[in-house]
Length: 246
Ligand SMILES: C[S@@+](CC[C@H](N)C(=O)[O-])C[C@H]1O[C@@H](n2cnc3c(N)ncnc32)[C@H](O)[C@@H]1O
Picture (cartoon, rainbow, N blue to C red):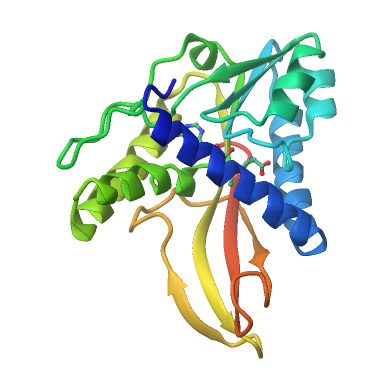
């Protein structure tokens, strides 16, 4: 849980941003949401034990095939640092679906410039899950902590190192979990001009190399007009239905 109200408010502001962006770009997001659900369904189909499944970064559930997960598993655990109230209500009314409020970086709102990256939390519900799904979360892990650290005076270069270490810690931690792991993450952000020509690229994983394999697709997260009238942003996304153990 996040102890600092300003940091918790920053996570909730991000969540509202996702809601509004989705509402404005439903058609552009649809192929990505379908491709994500497809990778999850492949992970479920290949999962022999089906007592529980945990979804990390479940958020507003846009990319979660909840009915299919409920049909397949005895228990569904939704894990997020800032569950939207609609999801809280839905979980309260749905037997076998539970919510876990957790900061998966392990920071828990205790930010101070120059700090080392902590170990991700040791959560019994994740250790015992037959399937853990890290869902369009990995590249987001650093956003709020680094922007808050910079507000507290941390230099940008240090912020990048901190962000890279957070992302690496998440991947290493996922690869050591006992159950099967499904990972969906953006691996590249591409800036396109109004003619669809690439004018810039950003590495959202700060130089982290992912294991071989998985399937890839594009997510037109911000078509022309969403962020600016003269450029669009596209994410290249990779999904592993069975992330190799590390
Ligand atoms: C890009 S959104 C994806 C949301 C969801 N999978 C969907 O598309 O409906 C990233 C999610 O990760 C959550 N998140 C970000 N940092 C987190 C952290 N440190 N621990 C747990 N969840 C976090 C956000 O609150 C948000 O719900």
